[in-house]
Length: 240
Image (cartoon, rainbow, N blue to C red; front, top):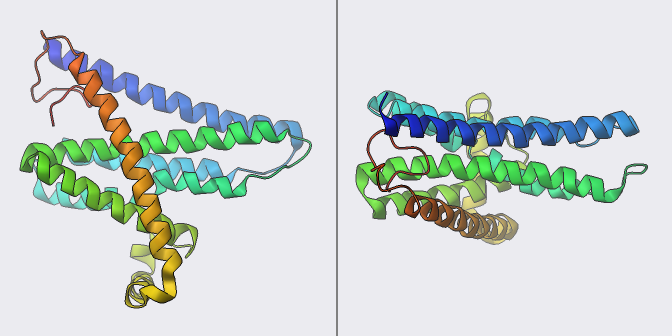
């Protein structure tokens, strides 16, 4: 293993462990709340956080097997299908309300921990796919791809929060889901909430992803000159 590969492995492991630790802290807060209050509030966030991890896993697999067109298309499709689950956690703020005897500030911190972790998981998976497309097709196509994915993600969040659809419904109820989506697209004036919500979500996600991307660029600019970019670069030190 060369020096660049070793650095790549260490940095990738550090990122994974950091996200795993953040997820563990979030779950621990839910368990601590249950022990203190005997209430099952916010247990649904644990399931939502699990779903938020899936697109990151699919992005890693897509990148790993990018040489295989079949694997790239299959896992890339699964990545897109489950990507809205990561930022979807932002909408779980709707569940926040005082639930005595637990202090309201504790619940705020609890929910926000899930929200932040979900966003980081989603942005990292999007960054991996952004980088993959940029390497193959150029940076312009890479950013166009990213904008399209963010737009679809905004619409996916709407389908999950308001229409109560799940990612796997593409396989279990494809006809009903398709009919619902077509109905929204055919009658935009009757479904203003769908388009306004989706657009605002997409704008929010783009701005926050742009900040995330800028931080990775800052990290790359500080990378040691003795470690040039190559095929074994880490998720945060490669050139787009």
